[in-house]
Image (cartoon, rainbow over all chains, first blue to last red):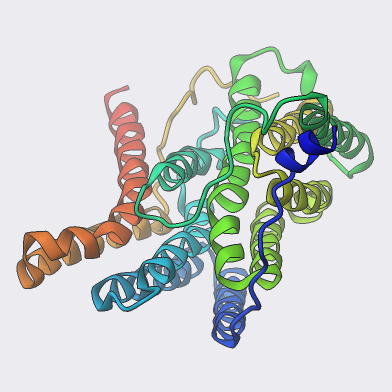
Length: 273
Length: 75
C-alpha cells in the first residue's frame, strides 16, 4: 500500500525561487493591476487596449528569449508565453462580443478561444515541463482514485453551496425553458475546465520547475485574479477550489479531478441559483 | 423574461472594444512575417512559436466575431 501511495504522489525536488522570478512576477502583477484600474476608470475600450498592450509586451519578451536562445532560454520563453494567457484571458473577457442568446452570461463566448488556447498550450511540445496527466488516474490502487473523487466532491459541494449562499438577483435559473440557458451554463462550466487546464495544467508545472513554491503561489494568485476579475465576489468558492487543486495537481500530477471539479462547480453554481 | 426569438445570436451593436483583439491579431501576423524575413524560415520557426500561441485564440475570436456579424447582416 505504501508503494502504491508513493507511486501516486510524486515528490519532486523544489528549487529555490530566483529573485528575478519574484521581481518579474511582481512587475507583471503591477502592470496587470494598472490595466485593471484603467479598465474600471476609463471603460472597456481602454481597458482592452491596456490588456492588449500587456499581452503584446509579454509575447515579445517570449520571442526575445527564444531568439537569444541562452541556457534556460527555452524554459523562460515557455513561461513567458504561457504567462501571456493571463492578460489574454482578460483581453478576451472585456472585448468579446456580447450575445443576448447566452442569457445567463452574455459575454461567455470568451471561453471558446480560451479553451482552444489552453488545449493548444497543453499539447505544445515546445513548452517545457512535464504536464500533469489530463485523463486517467495516476497509478494503480484505490487511493489515487479516491483523491480525485474527493476533489470532484469538494467541487460539487462548493458549487451547490455557492449557488444557495451567494447573492443573486433575478428569477431562479431553472425556470428558463429555452436552449439559451443550457448554452450559457455549458460555456460557464467549460470556463472552469479551461482554467484548470491553463493554470494548473500548463503554467503551474513550468512555474514550479523554475521557481519552486513561489512559482506555484504565483500561479495560484494568477488564477485567483482571473476568477475575481470575471466573477467578482462569486469567485470565492472558485478560489477555495483552486487552492485545493493547486496542491492536489502538484502532488499527484493528475488534472482529471481538478478539471472535473471546477467544471462541476461552475455548472452547479450557475444552474442551481 | 425577454423574448429571444428575434435576438438569437444577433450582433447588431458594435463596440470599439471588439476591434482591439483584431488589431492585436494583425500586429502579430505582421510581426510573424517580419521575423520570417529577418531570421530566415528555420530560425523564425523557433522564434514564432510564442506568436503562434497568441495567434490561435485571437484568430478564433476574429472568426467568431466575423461569423456572428455576417449572420446578423444576412438574417
